[in-house]
Length: 216
Image (cartoon, rainbow, N blue to C red):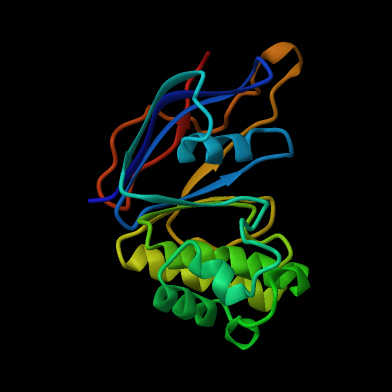
């Protein structure tokens, strides 16, 4: 059973509180994290991945996680197929390359890929990982309309198979039925902007739930 839950988690950066929030995602669940630059979208993703500790509260994982950040995390000097195989079984790597539309460039060194192709390659690494929980930070960056449609299809398929997806984005991405986690821009002096429609947190059933921010 896959699970990702934030219980009264405080996000902070440089000593400044960015947000206090709770949400829970069960199998098939999704969260769409939005907000202005500096609101803490990337911080939330990194806290979910365990790369940053929350200033307060608890993050619970059940299931492996795969993170897509700004860097694709692939060796630029290796052929794409070989670079991806460093992270996953070769058969999973080959299948993932086909899924993201890069089967035709699998023998090309990573450094020669275009910006959009490198983004697709990063997505392929996530797909090939077999992880239950996908944490995607600005996954649509560098993708054209066809690439965004591909991304939306991968997210939908992963959720249909019982996976969990957290998408932090400033670009439109269709994630039907996802919880909306809207992060406000902190006010000067470390205060937080109020959150519209905030609600008390409760554990969610599989694929359901809601997000909220609590008063400081």
